Image (cartoon, rainbow, N blue to C red):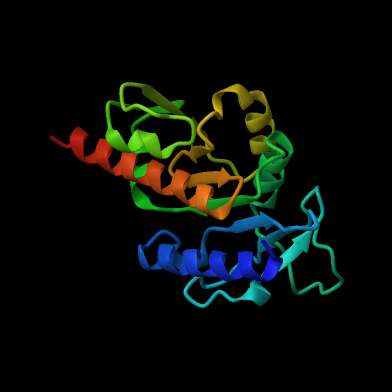
Length: 201
Ligand SMILES: [Zn+2]
């Protein structure tokens, strides 16, 4: 898939998610790797309702902007993206969401979220039955991005469902295609909604 068509599809996805309330107040960030293995990430401080192809900037493997305009800088959470690409080299797209249900659930659950017996668990790649227990890691929030790099590398074996939650912050999900990454993010969000409401009984 060409860089142009990935960006177009990604923009469409971001705008849909924005309408769902998943990226309030210019928050969240998105990245992809194009056919030339170039990494691109959304710029910081962009209203996701208005995001365009010019709002993606090329970065190197360490998250540094490849360019000379000092007014343009990548998202503050770039190091999380580069860590995921390093850990799972087959990844091509990473989506970040501030949808409220995972955030709510992470305020009452520590270390991991657990789901069991829900049909949509099959939305995660490789899960073919709802008769399973799914555990999604929850990491503490931090302003120090190198903290996440260390956390992700030390918990690699637990990141088997292509997503994780940052406590009282949001979710990250990834995939080998945008289609896969969307599926993982939307599955996680649905499961968190389910779990949140069932806990309110
Ligand atoms: Zn965030």
